[in-house]
Length: 288
Image (tube, one colour):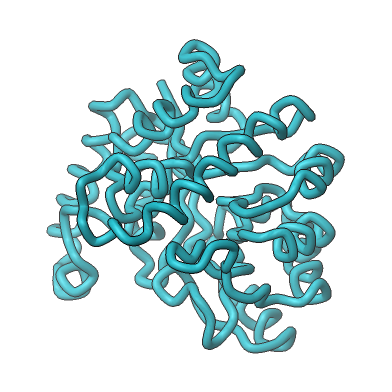
């Protein structure tokens, strides 16, 4: 049975956030049962969620575990006020608010801490990922807080600046990690940070006939190609690489997303289908 190391249960085809907010507990459980059944049909029994501000992953956790899943969620992420991340997490402005929010978050018993450090890849402006939104002091505090409680820290970061800061702060896993240089790959290896490079969002766009992205595909293709090359280099350096599809993102389905991720990994020298499937099996133990 396989593991998808990066999903968002709150983003799916079964219900909208509005529908979720209006539904009673019985209806919510029915949706969640169907959601997890779709993963079971794909041979996936372990999921690592990136959280959401509607507490959907929080409600999904007991349903998943009743079905025998290993299901880990941060409940919600932390993001900087005024920056990217509102659908994933709760906003914080400074270290004082970070401390307060972490105490509040702890009451929900998160399985890991999630931080949105940078923005997302800009499909129209090559190399642009927004700012690095937490200081080293702030992110280091979060990492220390998590470490003291035995919790890993899952950080969304793109670009060299953000990834460098994340590694220095002491994160556990790097999510996405697009648009980085070889120097960051060496640092990932040295720090023993697990990298979840989420190929499916960009790879699936490149394969789709969705005309919304026709004018963006040149930039997307360049960024995606660099990501494939960086994964190959990171692998040669001994970086632990995990497969997470970012299921729930545009054009990345739940259950099917991991198959997409595996297929995109097959484009990289050194990643045979057998090896990829072995990683997707073994990474369940990395979550426990």
